[in-house]
Length: 265
Ligand SMILES: CC(C)(COP(=O)(O)OP(=O)(O)OC[C@H]1O[C@@H](n2cnc3c(N)ncnc32)[C@H](O)[C@@H]1OP(=O)(O)O)[C@@H](O)C(=O)NCCC(=O)NCCS
View 1 (cartoon, rainbow, N blue to C red):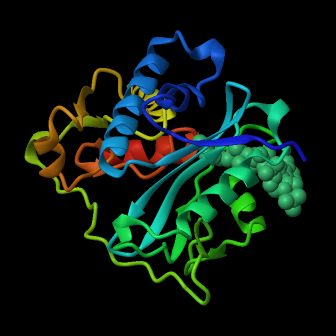
View 2: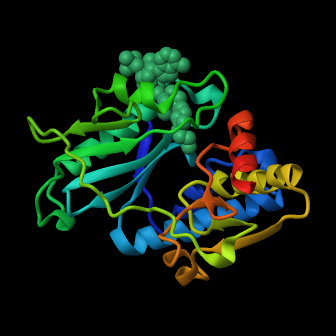
């Protein structure tokens, strides 16, 4: 099997990480320029905060795959945001396996974030990000030996210490706190993100809502510029319509339309 060069993301190759997910024909599109910019802000902050937070797989100087993660010191685990090999002609060559193996080898070593101990395990929540015909992240992680956490099929863990079983810590909710000023309005929350498509999907959300409710007032809130506006709403993400957070994904058209229409009543 071909051996790829796995490199940690540093100041030198951070731009490769910001660019890799966006198809070349979309790189000049304003929505993706913003999306990549939001990823750049996220990556810069992660690098400052943790030192290491992502790995790239290279053939020569071309980055072909990524894995992104963050340490969670309170739980002594590594949370994986995503793993992705964008180009079809690079699938099933062992890129993702080599990225994950590198992360596993790395996190079995003592880490300062964990008081000089290795991580107990890896944890991830997969989401439907695969391109048409591509293997899903969930099936990949299951193939690699990850086990389900509780009832949610997308919530997975992999022990690094023998016998470790991940018990999720109940997080303080990201429940939306309704605000009087949000009535009859649409709120779209954006800002630094590990995924350059987040902004694209929010734009799509805006466009779909405009079709459902032409003329409705729309407010964009940038997490990095107006953190207090996010905080007072319970650190919510995504979209709120008439004080109701929208749970459906914009590409699940029927559910999304139904939920938005209901929220507008
Ligand atoms: C899942 C993914 C990371 C796998 O990458 P890859 O480099 O092609 O994977 P590998 O070549 O290392 O293969 C890993 C295993 O998965 C299997 N696999 C990969 N693609 C497969 C496919 N289409 N069908 C069946 N098995 C497949 C391989 O056979 C291998 O299994 P084995 O070790 O038992 O032989 C890649 O397909 C992907 O990016 N999918 C989308 C993931 C996603 O949604 N990410 C979030 C979006 S940002």
